[in-house]
Length: 371
Image (tube, rainbow, N blue to C red; front, side):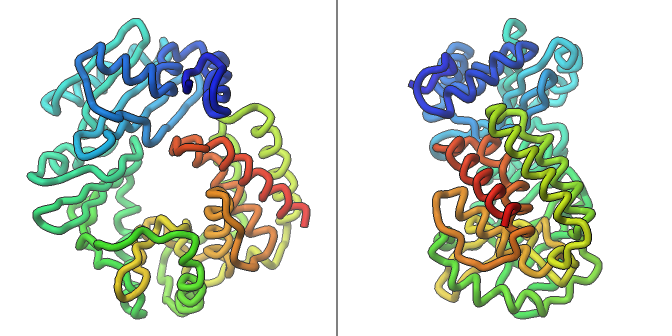
């Protein structure tokens, strides 16, 4: 059983405690429980096989926004749980959904279900989602959406922040000038980029040797005016990450806070955090596709100038979260920071076994910061 009644999986028990801790969001238990969510959707006339939460954005006692994905091809949805205060402002979301399709308003649970195209933080998504043959690949509410425009053989990424568009285009150009395989990105207006769709096999942890060959070449890439990710920026990012873990078990959250505090102390003046050259910024297996000619880098919207070893540390953290062994030798401070920054992601992304993935990241951060 996966319900939030406190029985079943470890994830279900975590979710049950979270729902009890946040009574201001009466719809929280419904969003977090796959079985209850399915029954709720069908009761309101939305019968989508395998409907599941793909991504969460949670503000305690305020809102929880969930991207809902079907099991196969089909429309994505945006489900929002509101507090009493935020419910009074839900009318803006209802009005934004006009003309996008079916809308469900549940005043008792304070839940609003709208098509993903109604995400008002991503204005171009409405037009893009209406493109013939376009299928949604990913949706991070109020942040980003990725669509596959099948007839055109094209990928379209819609961003809430126009700076991300400029950053992505610059990074892709720099990589391509250095002979590194990544799709050519074209800005399409202020909030979107397009590129050729890259078919291939999703990369896995087993592709680490190919990544090891690629990383030294990245250090030769001219980063231009890409943003800096140095000690100050990492410290700020860690503060946001630790604050961004309200969905976790309180015990794990306390351990994260302690590890982050120890990291901040050890980071003072550490040479390992000196900024070097180009970095992907968020390296993990899911940022690559393996083709007949090698690995192709996909997302570069977090490209930056970072300490040498940052990308290897990021890859290590992602692999450990998935239950693997870290393949790269990196400075412990970088490894700890990468693990801490990634710690909120398993809860947000709701993959099977996310509680174990979170614990592995916390364990890794504690070991690294103590090294």
